[in-house]
Amino acid sequence: MGLKIDFHVHTYYSRDSVTTLKEVVTYSKRRGLDGVAITDHNTLEGALRLKTREIIVVPGIEISTLNGHLLGLNVTTPIPAKLDIEETIHRIHEAGGIAVAPHPFVFYKSPPSRQINSYDAIEVVNASSIPFQVFTYLSKRFAARLGLPQTGGSDSHYAPEIGAAYTIVEADPDIDEIVGAIKKGAVVPAGNAIPWKIKVERTALKLKRKI
Ligand SMILES: [Zn+2]
Ligand SMILES: [Zn+2]
Image 1: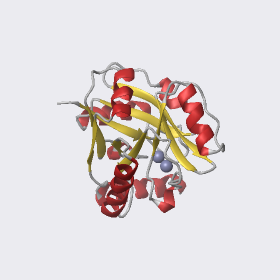
Image 2: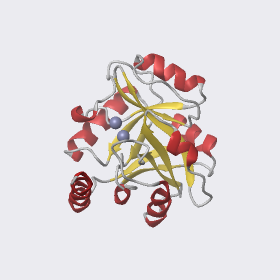
Image 3: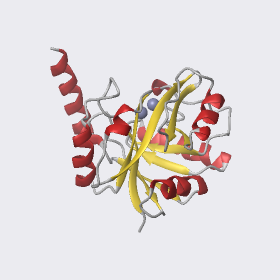
Image 4: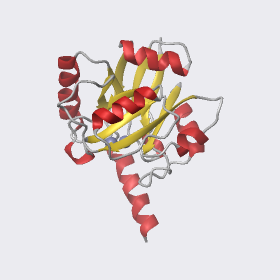
């Protein structure tokens, strides 16, 4: 069967997200996920604070490198932002994690460099990307060309978006096993674009907070 894991979830520890840690658990279970990776922008705070037995939590971070965004999964020591992307990959590996290139073609999301091939995997399904089909197609083709494993994640910044895209992982429910399965390609990306209804709700919520 495999585990169903959303490897790209933001919480309110990312300044642009409203999701609480409690909501991560509630919505993951509602969506039938076995787990998530918490990947806040340049901080591990939320990832390290979320302690639960209800779902698997892979600690992670989305780092703003000099050459675009980069996901570090299974990382528990801070990695500085604004370093060269290859240096950042090196630091992720030293910290015992793996480096996944998120949204490699989504120009308005600071895509990671497509000139290097030292990633451990490519996020080919990103539920927040628009137009979803085009970016999914280009990302899959890119990952196939590099011969790298393919993952999926929601890139959710609002709880109901969690699990819109995810990855099926052939592994036991153990973080090291899960990350190992990504590395060896025992993963299948899945899911869809975040529905418009949810996007509208999220925008309305953001406006309300500003008033
Ligand atoms: Zn990003
Ligand atoms: Zn993100």
